[in-house]
Length: 375
Image (cartoon, rainbow, N blue to C red; front, top):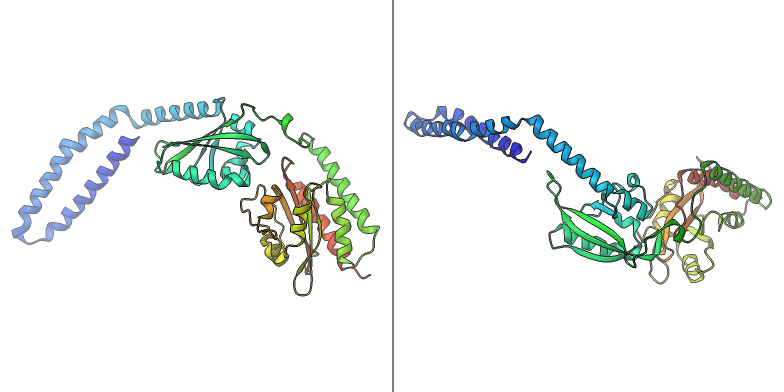
């Protein structure tokens, strides 16, 4: 196919030169011999170069060449997918182009979900910058690299990532082939993942959501309404633990947001204090939800500063090891936003699903009604 492309470029150049010769017919008579010599030279070029080249390509036949290329591509794709070693093909920005079966099993991420997303999004926050830097260096042709990283879903297991440059056929840019291997010779498996393994059926998950909605309704109806802080405190108690590792609630006052409730895991007391002392105005996700009234559902958030920083200057999403979050405005459209509810899941816990986000959105309207109801 490369020879065919080269022949096409040469033929296009020839056509452009012929057009220039046609335009030169209007030159003075004294200059016509020069134009005639150029025309004869071009004819010789066609007879001696382009025509034999065309015959050589025609003997193989475009369909034959294309058929051979397709067969080779299919073979290479099959080999890539079946290689028993976890392998990913990424670009210089670490965006995943392909993920083989072994890599999908190793990382716990489906190939269809990973494709088009940065591979760094599946790594621990502390490893992302180093991995990006090494991938860019490999793509620039500075040699193969290797480094130890940690998967966000399995942070306790070190993973050795080996990066090498690869130039796919017919593509102008260099890609990076990433081979993942357990650094301590232990292959991560679902049995080693701390916390519950999501193997429930959709029916069971739906029933669990309905139980959550019922518990939330009971909590709202069993207490006083019209007290925004009290309503959010009762709601946070329902959501904390059984549904989210962290629950952060902000109330929209006359001038600004104020943080009223922060519930965190038992081993994150210091982190909870930092989040409680944070100004909600420094949380881009919270400000956007309060301003625009739209729900945010980032999975493995790429921007570590999306929820701002604590009083020590550390990004809260990194310190809390957040793997997915829900940031929901509390409003009864078209009314004003009463507050913002943010839920974190961290570590190996399953990411928030669209069904769970829909259930929280429904509960947020009930919360807004209870917060704005007259006492």
